Image (cartoon, rainbow, N blue to C red; front, side, top):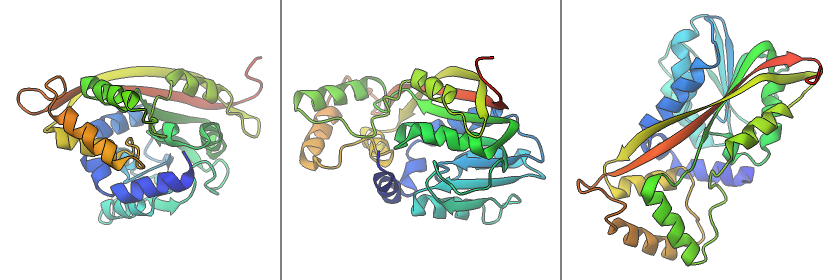
Length: 272
């Protein structure tokens, strides 16, 4: 996805991005932080920081450390700054391409990438930037959602899109976690590389209180095509009435897979 499209998507989403799936975002952020091995004096850089959820989970650990968040979305950065306005930790938030932040080389002891890889126009460059920023022995961790169209509701949506000849969205998040591992192994930068690359899978059931809440989440995350509004509205109407999508209590329940990629920055030839 082009950087301009990413910025526009999340500028339009605003606070709805985090509000539409807080349990999902917080679970992914907390699991990501666990894999960064943060210490009290760690320097964290969060690439694609959005409204600051990952840094918020790291803040209690960084009693003597620092945090920087980089994102393309002006609106998401404003939300992140508001979040920490009265906090003990005072992160710095910058509006930059997460794949080319301009931050100082080896300025971080840990770099996080929360739900950002599938959106990235150049995911390999994003991982190379994480490697460049991280000191030797430091940690890099990323989260990837298995599919944006969660559960039976999502399966029905894709079926409707395909039958009507609608091209799937640019940001469809069918980012194979094995691709993330392959890219991590290629992300050498200035004789440093990602080593001990590990990928783990977490599956949880999440639910939205109504079809409209679930649909709003898809929109806020940028999963829906924006150039077929009438057709998408018709599909939403059909899905809303489908008893295979909405439970009898009106909720939409979805099993969601989250993959967690983690690695340590080392130097030398990876094949020796």
